[in-house]
Image 1 (cartoon, helix red, strand yellow):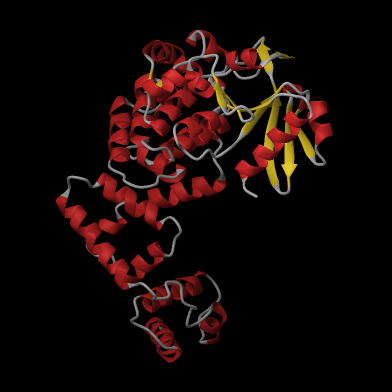
Image 2 (cartoon, rainbow, N blue to C red):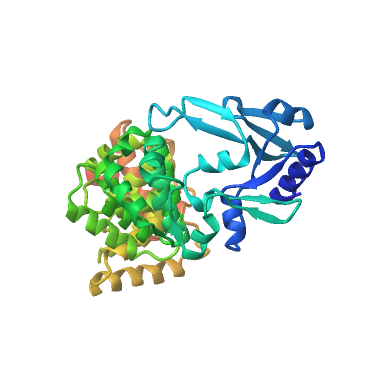
Length: 402
């Protein structure tokens, strides 16, 4: 059973018990656009307790918001009771929740294209907010007054930009002007939430458009206040030169490409990125320009290629080098060298380990590591290919020190 089938089963179960259950939000939008929804959210007039009682396995993930996760096998389907929200106090969470009907539930949502329902039983769209018309216009518009929608939840400003890039829609002018007016408030949202939206932006249909909107709206200046206008311009330009998929690491490396490593790491602290992302960014920064070096050795190339971030490094270098014929030629040459290495073991077992080097008479200490690294690089260069050659090389090094 797939996610859609599981969601249909949940809807049918709730409806068969005398309640109303509808597909809601983004899945309805995607269905109308002919896109395969990533999630199927369900809204209902049944209370969380009633929903839980209809299924053998449920998880109340947000009981105060009327949200229940229904388990159909190992598939999770989110079911939320129709609700209205009010009393927002921190630019993110409502202070008051009341269970209500479908129309009131639609009116609390962010954008018209996300405010529609689909009645599976009667095969019809239920649209209280003009979402279908805005889909036809390819338009991002807030439900009700933009000032109110954004002040309720500042994250909606980033979501507007993300949806614009994701769907290649335009942001309606009143919505856009209000977004720009309130953009400085985005930092009141947690760094993790901001990072999550930026990650979605990177994965969108048109990330360069999204990052350009981040800059034009003032959101980028609020999130990265240390960056200059020239830095933003370079960042957007580099991202626009990237074709293919962009993950968070590559997106940030490109957008911050004119900023040095230490400043970039400092600017990214508020986003509370994972250690993995930060480690990957550091590696990419530290190896910038390596691939365009004329003296890049075979061993150095193997070391770079064996790192999981190699492709992001190559893609970034290619994007940065657009217009520089010499660097582009160097990168194309590297691509040919990489192709020739297909099937070659990039990280072979060292011919000698540290203990074997010590047994040859190398004193314990930093010298062992130095010899080990130098020997391994010669092995990667394929200048030393057998254990005997490795032993002879170490002995010759020892004789040089006598």
